[in-house]
Structure formats: C-alpha cells, structure tokens
Length: 377
Ligand SMILES: *Cc1c(COP(=O)(O)O)cnc(C)c1O
Image (cartoon, rainbow, N blue to C red; front, side):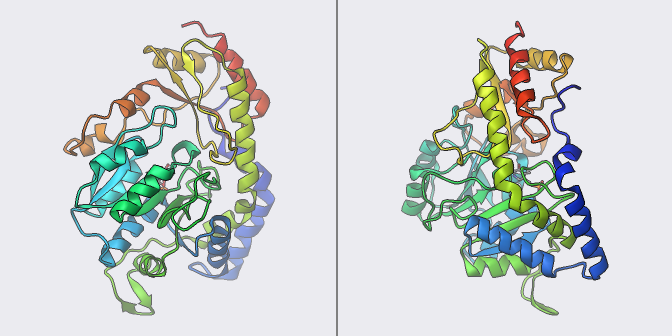
C-alpha cells in the first residue's frame, strides 16, 4: 500500500527516545500502580480542558461506564432512566449506557456535521430522561445552543464522549462557561486507544468533571469501590490507569495541539483538491479548532461507495469505514427499540475514511485527492 490508512509506528516515531526514557523511569521506580506519572497525567488533562477534576482510568469505554455508574451511586439516575445519544457513533457509547442498566434513546444525525441533530432532542425528552450523551464524532465538536437549552429546560446532565476529539474547542460555551471539550458538560470521557489523536501504547482513558461528588464516586468505583484503604463504600471495579501508559501520555500530551493542527493541514489539502461529481467533502467550518479531524470522511453518493473503495485499494490508498454497521444494526442490539434513523443509515452506506494521521504527509493527501478525481465511476 503506497498510502497506508494508518501507520502507528510512523505516528509514534518522533517520540521514540522520550517514550523509551519515560518507560524506563517507571520500570526503575518500582511504583507500578498510582504514583507521580498518574498525578502528572491528571494535572495535564485538567489544565488542557479546564475541568476541575480528572481521573485517569483504564480505557474510554470504562470512562463512560464509570460516569454513568457514578451518577447511579449518587442517586442522580436509576436503572431504566433514559439517555439521549446519537445513533451515529462508535458502539462503545451505547454499550456504556446499556451496561449501566439505562435506556439509550437513539437520535438521528445531522447530514452535514454527521453529529447528533440537536433539533431532534426536544421531541424525544420524556419524564424518564436524565441525560444527553453527546459525541464529538470524527473530532468535530457536537455542542450548540439548542443542546444547552434542552439540557437546562429539563434539568438533564450532559455527558461528553470525547474519545475522538481531544483538544477541540467549542465556539458555543459550555454549561459552566468553558470552551474546551471535556469541560463543556457535566462530565467527559476520553480514550487514548492507540489510534486516537493522542494515543497511548496500549489502552488508557480519563474522566473529566466539574463535580467533586462525581469525581469522588468515579475514583472510588475505579478502585474496587474504595474511598480509603481497605474501606469499600461501593461494590466497585478495577478500572485504574496504568502508570506506564500515563508516562507515555505525559510525553505526548504537550504535542496534542500541534498534532491536531497537522491533521487540519491534511484535511485542508483534501478539501482543496477533491473535485469529483459523486464525492462530497466534509464541512470546513470558520473555526479551525472546533474539529480536530480524528477522521476525514468523504461521502460517495448514488450507491458508488463500495466500488470507489475498491478502486482506491487497487491504486494503493488505504481506507476504512467508520462505521459500516451502526450500533442499532448490530446483532447485540437486535431488540433495542428505536425510531427511524434515515440519516445514520444513509451515512453508513456512503462514507469512506481517508488517511489523515501525521503518518500521512500533506503532499500525500493532495496526491490521494488527485487519485480520487481521476477515478471514473
Ligand atoms: C474509541 C471510542 C470509545 C472507546 O474507547 P476505548 O478506549 O477504545 O474503550 C468510545 N467512544 C468513541 C466515540 C470512540 O471512538
């Protein structure tokens, strides 16, 4: 493949000496659970987002689960309550909701942003609705005045799935006046899965929040339900962040903004180059920080997506589809009730993800754009 979709070794290559040194330091320290690397990581995340509390956890799915289980322990939610959530998301978002015994209410996507269509929120609020879980999918901030108003009017918690959007800033302020994702709503869940914009060298995640009670509940739940040594207030879990992964992230987090800017350059090169009658390029908004371009997604119309993808593979361009099967079409959710979701289903049939990581150069992106222009379907 001349243009691989994602080469993680290439992405991490600039950091190798610092990563090796940081790993060696942890190995030599003898401190393998908790400790200074975790504290430094949590401080860096709070500084980046503006959230008062960060809890390093095992991965992004656990971050989402711990937030919901935390709210249940605090009596804010109970089993059977409803959470409004975009239908167009990675399945982990929905898994967290059903894992907590809550009911996901799937809301269709906006065709332009591919994020939750906030104009559809009000109509699906019921007396059992307790929260909106917004997902900044593909790196694009999913936050606007309608979402804020709907949450305020009905007293809903707002939880952000920040797995794909680290470092993004919202043009519309959050519930607490902040602009960085992870601090817009009541709680945020981050993933540092290796393919994310800032990836660990294994699994890692974080919970951010403004709420001291939720922060304490999440910290306890992630550590067997322990609030102090050998004292268990909850029947908890083991969802702690690994200090070696925290050390890897302490090396990479200072470069998150630069790497996001580098991704934007690639998105710009694609948007400037691609001119094809059957291809729609993604929205480029006025603000350069409200999308950190976790994925660069084109839509191929008129049922030509699969043939376009085949041709790109033949021509040496690696691609992916995020996601070909939406959560509500997965076998595990065959019994999940939902209304019609035409936009989410259309997207699943039309989208292709092009290479966007820092392992792909701006020149590569322009070349891939030309390759697309020359494909006759
Ligand atoms: C990756 C991802 C998750 C899950 O994160 P893990 O660290 O892989 O558990 C959740 N939500 C979204 C939108 C994601 O992209």
